[in-house]
Image (tube, rainbow, N blue to C red; front, side, top):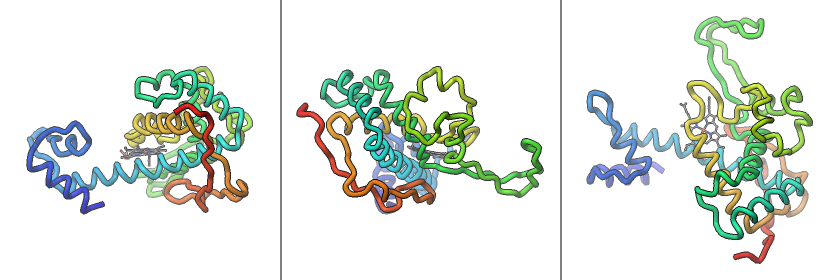
Length: 245
Ligand code: HEM
């Protein structure tokens, strides 16, 4: 990764042209005093964005195919929306506002299998929360996985139900009952990108294919590492769902 990123930085430095992409933004960004980032700083930023953005989105999609294969009614509804909006063609960004159910599917996937399944903060001073004293220096863990499956906020929390994500249902819930992208000052900077990518990828693939388990679906186990991933991978078969090209 270093070799590739440093080569791109070197090539870009030679021309100073704005290519309209992330590396250009990083290279051309200036502080008030006119100073710019060093090669190492640009490399660090690019690497963080790549690593924070890749594993999270790919795991979300793996869980999406898992949940769709297990919930045929939701899968059928997704297909109906894709057929109605796309009539077999590839989706474009312009289709996003009409891919509402697809987006709801993605939101529900992030509820049940949040790729970032916990975040942590260190208390810099003594702090009281809900009647508990958190002494300075303590590490506080907040788990999306646990909160997202709390029956106070989601009825039948273990069940996959994209209908939870209508505008009315969202508004009826406390804001932090659902926080797949964190919150506050360090909220995920890639949220908009991830939602767009997730919805577009689901639409692109589900337009033509359904996924079915090869072998026993019960064999799918969660592995909570830095991201929440399927422990043994997920062996699935692509089944073409319509003859539309
Ligand atoms: C489904 C996909 C994603 C999920 C679930 C996710 C989740 C999160 C969460 C929970 C945080 C906050 C961590 C904390 O508060 O300790 C975070 C931060 C971050 N995310 Fe994402 N993320 C996703 C996609 C992306 C993408 C696509 C990018 C970049 C293109 C990205 C870049 C970042 C960066 C740079 C931070 C650190 C922000 C900061 O500390 O100021 N993420 N993400």
